Length: 410
Image (cartoon, rainbow, N blue to C red; front, side, top):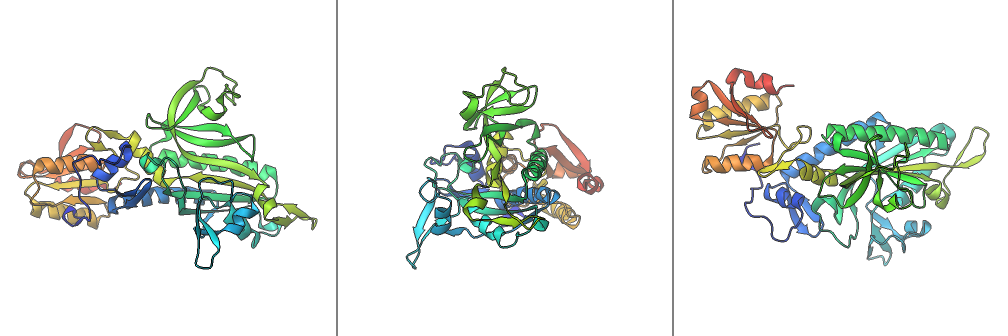
């Protein structure tokens, strides 16, 4: 991608109506654009990052036999009434169609996925199954002031599993936990993310959240350093010790919830009369699990965690481009390098803008935050190569022209 052709531009000023750091810097760097409180457009750079997060999620869902679907976002009132959530789900966006029927914009999809699965999973031979989607969700948040961390419109990966018995659900639940930690490891968040015990609500004694440590977090968790698990503040008063080792010496920290998993049991299958025939020909209720993860929230979390005073520091796995190539009045030589990188399938953003001063190019590169910066100038060419610097480092060096491709081909 040539930066002269990029749809967006960077902004020097901090957006006046935005209080969260992640939204401020993502807007300044040209990744997102604010439409309203908790509502954002994803621009070319931002969509590249979001798609990379989504693809990591897809990779890991495939390892646990998750099959991707895409369900309707416009949902009829009747399905919510079936589960008694039409009047009890405070965050639902409700509307009336020209047919005078009432609908809700999808905030979660248990009410849609259960009758869908009922059509196909009728026998014990067809269980277990798990299906997921990555879809825009809508929630009427009363306080959408945290940028991508708390949106009224946001992306969610929601997966639902269907089982013949509790033991099968329990086993799959552990497989999902492991898959989630693989996702966070690939995002560079593994060391900061804790499996956190939370109240199970109507579904079970405990549910589990995945909480990433950052001072920007809205949640407070209490960490057991021995077990590397945590307890959410909402249950700490009645459960003020580690659920794994009973340690009472827990450390409080602020965190962002980047995923959650629940054992739903038969709550939704019972509501929709979803049953399967066992091997004795007897009808049995299907047991369900639910597994949520927010790709757009993860994007905001990564920005809150990985940054410095100059801008974003993207992990290489989800950076919009691996390389930011800057030409300082040497566009012909830089263009040859750019074409060679493209030829070798190496992602590169080429700052070929002729009217922009060197200092502004350096500032934009730091703000956008690609993992590596390459600078082509008369000075570097005279030295036989280009200047190379990793984004988190202040160390610079010269890499010979004939070594560039080998350096970035892995």
